[in-house]
Image 1 (tube, rainbow, N blue to C red):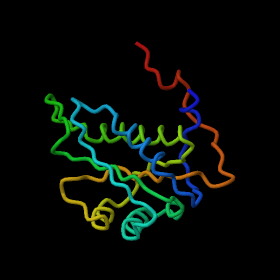
Image 2 (image 1 turned 60 degrees about the horizontal axis):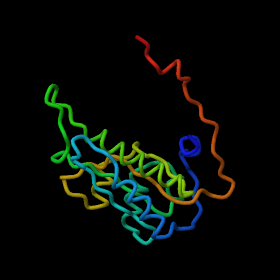
Image 3 (image 1 turned 180 degrees about the horizontal axis):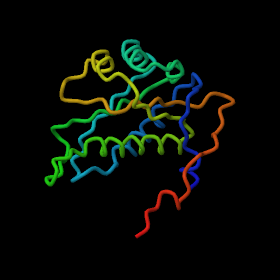
Length: 169
């Protein structure tokens, strides 16, 4: 419960770069994510502070200035050829699988004192071109990762009540 309450969309980061052990912990938690039929149709790409071309690709693909404050980004990529497709309606679950690994990243990062923000409102063509992605992979999410900037606070969570989201039969 504490982790769910403390995780929030961080939009201001300090310049401190998470150490390798912390980042590896977050990535290991992500690696353990479940996926439909255990297909694991995702790949992760790390864009660090030293990767100027990668950073420019991320920043140019998303129109909000705050994203440039993050010291690193985890790019969540899906491979449609590897994803599970439901036979009854031919619905691909690649977005669901990528959503699960993305939330594992966000929760593991929060546990380690890191801030994240799940970014989906980006230009995939700009990101794909800037990162040199093959056509095999669909960029699903950008996750800025870093320590929250000084003065950052967990905002009040405005969520519907359980009665509003629970459909009763």
